[in-house]
Length: 273
Image (cartoon, one colour):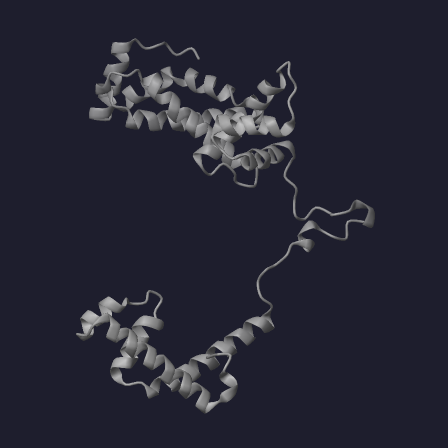
């Protein structure tokens, strides 16, 4: 905090020396003179409960990033430019460490995270009390997010994180954890094995039925039906030298031949067909 202030011309000269000659001494003087700015910005976020020293260090990282990107020829004071980088670095640190659950991944969500408390307090000070839903609607309009986003963020800021290993009910002696009641949507092992067997069986049926097709029919069916991005009738018509209507007719005939071959070999495959 005792570092001397820099005059505009001196600041410009130091920035030029660092940008053009990578003068470490110039960088040190430039950043040292602006550490009070880092401390002042970090102090604005002290209410988030994170160590002040850590936020100052993160702000210093932003200050160094600003020095690396600063363009002296634009005739802008370094402090004006560095403020944005310092604040962004501190905010990113807070979002990463305030909770074990990452939040504020978009710019609008970040704005909501850092402004919700302030806006809510300002609206609460109004002499005309308003319903909770109306307050949330006004905050959503001010920040540019949906009302649902405001409600979710408000619930996150209102309560602490809860461990999945925490007992669900202290009365039962803590025998059940919260994670014991999480729903797993992954199929059961027997379902996975059954699906694999069914898939292999259907592929075997299909490979056998494809033998009834001639070369042109097989090409059309493979490129139209057996690929993730099926070819268009027009593109197939150009490659085969026929019209797209003719391609459609051949495809329809080939699919009917496949259906007949599958049902002839085993009539109970009608559901697959």
